[in-house]
Length: 202
Length: 202
Image 1: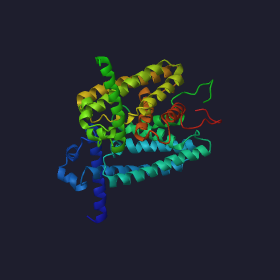
Image 2: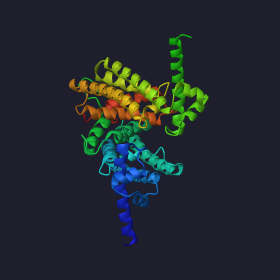
Image 3: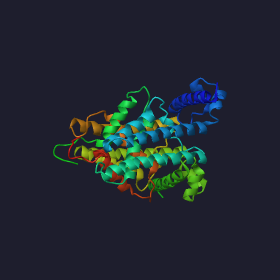
Image 4: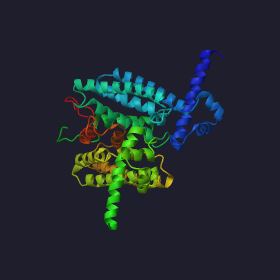
């Protein structure tokens, strides 16, 4: 096996491990699921798991980093859409597909408080880059009059809060698909919970 | 000192302890802040702290329980308002006042994953009662045509996700007051991020 195909196989294996880890995290809680529980969920020996990740911190960091790369792609795709409805709608659906989609590793995405400082710092730098892109989409829409005027930071908190919260309650194979949730959240965040009333323009 | 005034003094002291604990949690992270760090933040001896709470679980549980009592009051007050705009607006502002207001113990509110099972169960029962009230307000508004049609559970997740997320980023004495955030979130969640456009009714 040459170096490149070996790397591809390693990446595929690491991805499969993340899916199993997310499952163990959901069942046991992020703190109670250790390397042993993750190996069990995957039917791997602990030794085999340690071949791919030296410890739980490295596993969580790898997941964060990959998730943030995917979110940065989502933000770039969103920016290429037309108008704020298209851009923010694309962002909302893309963000939820990353968090809740097939690999459903979203549950790992929020558990970085316990990472050791050097890894945490790398995650936060990348997360800040994503959040700046989100705020930029909002601020641009405000300049065009398509987004309500206000502080783009607070708007981004509303948006990202509702989106990231899904990782806490969403269960793959449960009552809703990731697509159901994405469509619903898109509509509610862009247009609000209240129905437009004939006698008042908000 | 009679029994009743002693109880009042104990409650006041426990409240003061929660404020200090929330501060330690914000600085150190919920998991790294132990009883010793909380005592230090309050200028108490550890022994004095243990007089009021036998351990960290009891402290976190007491905070959760008191927060949920306050939220149940918020939901009852909201239900007494007129129309969905009044009811959900009152709920949003009340929820954020509880989480971010003077006692600012919101940071403790979300950290119940580590509670021992019997305490966790009590917290979840009360939390479910609150969430049912929130979904009820949404469903009633849908019947009156004041809230957009859809699954009230998903709507409640959008609402509570954005609201609870504030406990992760809000800093007392920072750029915004709890009132700023409450007004902003009320407006955005009820009416959406997008400005109404003259050429389209959503």
